[in-house]
Length: 112
Image 1 (cartoon, rainbow, N blue to C red):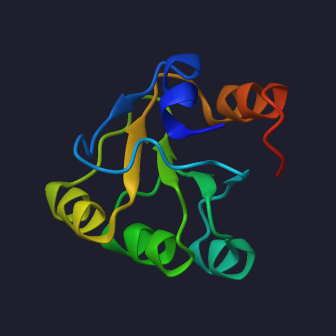
Image 2 (cartoon, rainbow, N blue to C red; image 1 turned 90 degrees about the horizontal axis):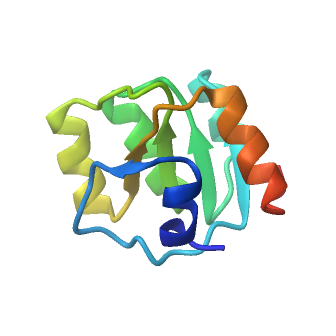
């Protein structure tokens, strides 16, 4: 499944319009503790977090994640979004809770 296919399912809005929305999502993870995500992150992962600062993008880029999904219509600072664009990381905002997002991704067969 790719980002474009996931967007309507999670009522997602792309915050980084020009990025790689055709990238594949092969796993998902929800966590707000950055050191934990550093240890658990994987390539092509969708990361669900409420964190919005530059370090989120650094970790996502380090692991070559597909996207960062912000629940509950959380917005990301412009400096972080600019860095996401530079690194090719898609950032999505969704009105759904992190719990609901996990359920939807799991129903679509995206493993943890």
